[in-house]
Length: 144
Image (tube, rainbow, N blue to C red; front, side, top):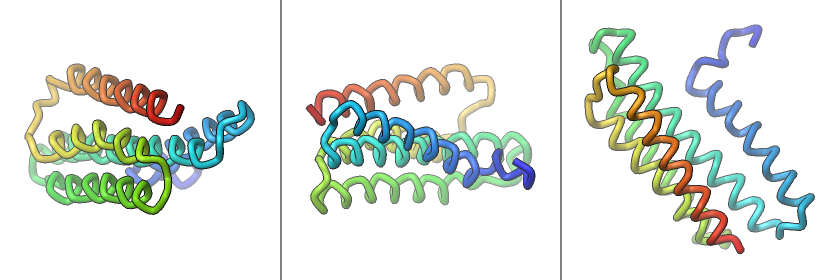
């Protein structure tokens, strides 16, 4: 916090990774298999990363009054996060990792590409909560 990086995309993703890591430790302590705990950890990191990219697009658009628009770049990055999840599942981690990452990654890509009015932030927030809930359900069902 002393460098004021916590509100940057990298800072927010780092915080999300740290919080998701706590879930990894709890899952292992509760007796979850290592691949399942790791898949859940990575799914949350990748999903939160994608969500952070979408939020950053909205913030940049508002703060710059539309002069700056990282939407396409962030959409590509969110897509790469989804591809990473698929690649990790293909490499041997549970398939639930790829499936659980997709709802939030796809939502984030849409938000990045569509110009959403700042007046719609409440609805976007609830849609993000919904995509996170879908991620949770996929992980719970897919990792049992």
